[in-house]
Length: 175
Image 1 (tube, rainbow, N blue to C red):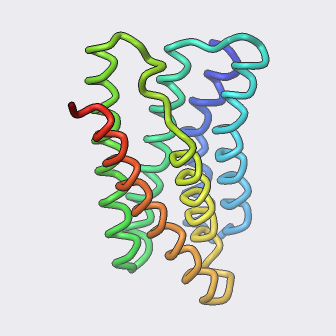
Image 2: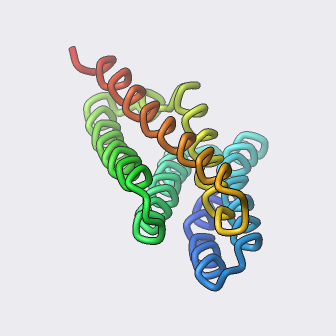
């Protein structure tokens, strides 16, 4: 397994210290592990391109790691924070992630081209907003209420962008 694939898999493995540290009230350490995990999302692609190690397997592993990382974190946050906004955003985001994965699988099965299902810039913006919101949630127990409010706005915005991008993406393929 090459470095980009190891980085992709590590993103999911980082969920363990992120959640355990948070649960034991080491909020800043939890955030640090979260930031490291979020950076692996950039680094896996960077190293794959730099070292000419891009592959269909690596691209799919990266997508799977992203979906698992976000979905598991959102589900955990839904049960850890008493927030209807987190719950609704989680339902929207996780259902979108499952739907987009199925749509991508369908497209690849028909066209045989993995390049057909790459995310666009809107997806990258959504990910940045989502990662920022989720990261802020991890430090809300030790920050003023305005940080929780900001994180909820970011997570809600990312949920809306998620569904907008899914509709845009699916309209491209529904002919």
